[in-house]
Structures are given as C-alpha cells and as structure tokens.
Image 1 (cartoon, rainbow, N blue to C red):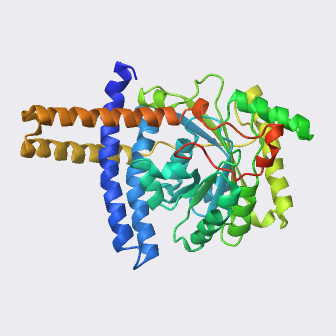
Image 2 (cartoon, rainbow, N blue to C red):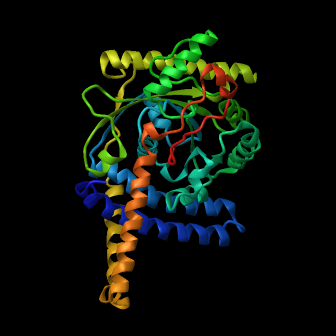
Image 3 (cartoon, rainbow, N blue to C red):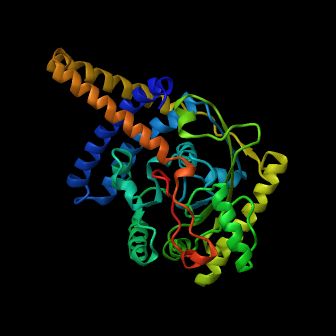
Length: 386
C-alpha cells in the first residue's frame, strides 16, 4: 500500500474498526439478552445498530469519494422500494456492487435490514463479517449438497421478519471478469445456450430455492442491472478511499413474485431468460451510455451518513484521547510498540479488505464444459460484503 493512500486509509480504517467493535459489542449483548426474550425486538434493535456501521461506508460513497449513483426505474417501483420485502438479483459487474446496493437501501430506508447470501468464510471477518452474522445474513459453502438445508432454514427464518427487507442474491455466483466471460461463452457454445456478452451464466438452484420458500411472504423480485458509463472509470475500493469519484448506472425492474411459474425448472428458465434480457439491456447501455427505457429517478444525497460519521469520529477520538491520558500508553517504549502494532494490524486489515474486493481475486466461475455439473450451484457473492 503506497504511503499517500495509507495516510487516508489508516485513519478511516481506525474509525471504522473502532466504531465497528462498539457496534459488535452491543449486537452481542442484544443477541444474548434480548433475542431469547423477543426475536422481533432484537431485529428492530439490530437494524439500528447495523445501520450505524453501514452508514460509514455509505458516507465514503456519498461524501468522501462523491460517487454518483443514477437510478433508472419507473415511478411505481421507486415508490415501493423500502416499503416491501424483496428478493434482489443483480449482475455482479464492479468491485463495489454490494456498496451500491447499500446506498440504494439507505435511500429507500431499509439499510439496516438489507441481507445477502454470502460465502461462509465472510462471517469470520472482523467487524463487518461479525455484524453480518448478527444481522442474519445467509452464509453458504458454495456446495449445493451442504447448502440446500442451510439456505432453506435461513429463508424460513425470514418469514416473521418485522420490517421490510431486501435479500440480495448474485446468481452469477462470482464477479464478472473477461476471463470468466470467455469461460461462460465457451460453455454456452458447447451447450447450445445463448452466448453472453456482458454477463455470466446464472446458477439457478439457489434462486429456485429462494423463490420456492419466499413466494408466500415476499411480493416482489427486483431485477437490478449495474453498468458503468464509458466516461467514468470503474469504481474500486482503493479509488473510494482515495476520494476519486465515479458514476454508476443502476437499472431496476420490479417483477411480481406471484407471476413467476410454479414448476422449479420453469423458475430456473425464468432466471436464465432474465439474464439473456439483461445481456441485451447492457448491449443497449453500451451503445447509448444510459438506460433509456426507464426514467432517471432523483435519489439525492442524504446528510444522515455525514452526521453519523462525524458523531462516530467525536466518540472515537474522545475515547482514544481519554484512554491515552489515563493509561499513559505513549510514555513507555512498550506502549509505543503496542500502539504501532495496532496501526499495523489495522493497515493489514484494510489492505485485505481492498484486495478481497477486487474482481481479479474472486473465485473463478466453474462453468467450463468439463465442469458443467457445477452449473446449478447456489448463487452467491464471493465478495465478503455482497
């Protein structure tokens, strides 16, 4: 990590991890004390606590880097966002698709109750993974034999969720790269399927299971398409921490759950058809540099995340100063060494976070013809925050 980016990343990392540990502590207390008495009350309290952490990352998008997220959808869909349960399926185009989703959820008022299907290792990540575990994210091993029952029980647990939630499912199973696209095209050609140009072939078992178990209490599926205009560099975590802006276009189409077919194979085909249509939509976006079939909605830039970050900065800085004065930590070489070690740990954690988010480091998509048996594997992001 270069010196200049580190000068920004380390202070932001210290703020995020310090405040995150405070949030994790309160989440753990509520999980032990409140959840056994009232699951609904715990979920309402956890929603507030999780939002206090997630808003710090929203602040980086909105106020630090100044990333513009332009939403293209119809007025009725825009009005209902955040007011109903929804299953969200999206292409996995950039390194920060998960953050774009959080920004949209924050604008819609359901950031604290936004969920996702994640790979199992994500829940062990300090602060962010722990908070996701307390928030009931679904963690899978990316093996259908092991994940089927886990997914089923996790989805059934959401039936009595007291607040509108979004459950994000990246059915491509991995982030888009040119190498993975070539593998998908090779497989599609050999299997006689439509050859994709801008998306990967969806893995449908997880989607079919989600529809089957959520059909009775989730009214809608949000079909989200993310694209980066030609005039904008692709957003990455490193660019965000450096304060470098980008533009992201988001197309949202709402489908009623009741309109989906009943048979599992028909639902799987519906998902595949959606991604064929999404591929064509992205072709059109490349040609026009916008989603011209939907109206551009004004999402604004709420001040809430800015207020939360300023508040956290005051709490953390005040607490750190009082602790240093009380402990005289910096008055001895052991204390200085301990402090330096803490800074190194935070730097390494932020470095891991940035590297882990990069598309090039995501798990390769197992869709080559010789591995076609994995095609039906449950969809889920290989990014820790999806």
